[in-house]
Image 1 (cartoon, rainbow, N blue to C red):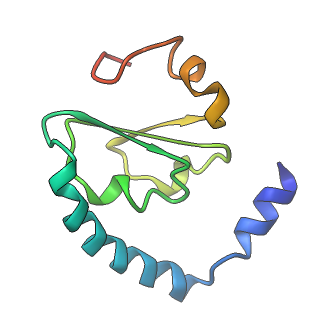
Image 2: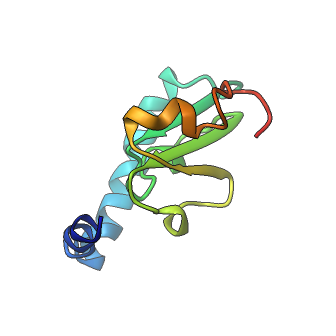
Length: 100
C-alpha cells in the first residue's frame, strides 16, 4: 500500500488538483440527471471524491483502497475497502439507504 500512496502523492500538483475540482463541478452538474437526489449514492474508487462531492444525494458513501477520508467532505461516509471486499466492508451487507 505504501507504493500506491507514494504514486498518488506525486500524481497531481496542487494547481492540477484545483483544476480537477473546478472541472468536476461541471461534470457533477451533468451527471446529476442520473442521480436521484432522494436516493443514496456510492462512489467506488472515489480518489479525492470528485464525483460524490459534486452530486446531491440523500446519503453519500465513498470507498477507495487508500484511506482518503481526509479529502472528503463531512457529509460523505467513507469505507476503506477494495472492490472485491466492498459488500463485507459496508457493515456486513448493509444496503444503501439503511442506517450506518
